Length: 146
Image (tube, rainbow, N blue to C red; front, side, top):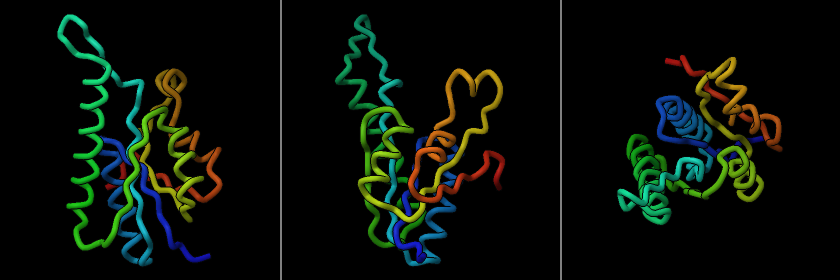
């Protein structure tokens, strides 16, 4: 099966940058279409009435961060051609699966923070969820990859 569509799930972490690098290089090598997905995590919304930070203002900041991050990654891999962009709001692991079902990639690429123990038990693992629920192969870049 030829890889014609690659979905790269990112956030603003260094782990994500490694996954994006892998995804862009692979897509370039395979001459595949690329989509970059940055989920605006509603769990990160910060509201503070005393400081005048509203839910709308917080969402606006998160959306701007997502746009900046996607733009930064695309600039780093200039010359790659058209890049599709997705910035849904919601729970990251569920939105990655939703976009994958909608866009129908042949491969999903993402990084992992490499959490273990209690931290992983409490926060869960986005990568693990995606691996278990995706309908296509998932390539996960390790946290200590060079």
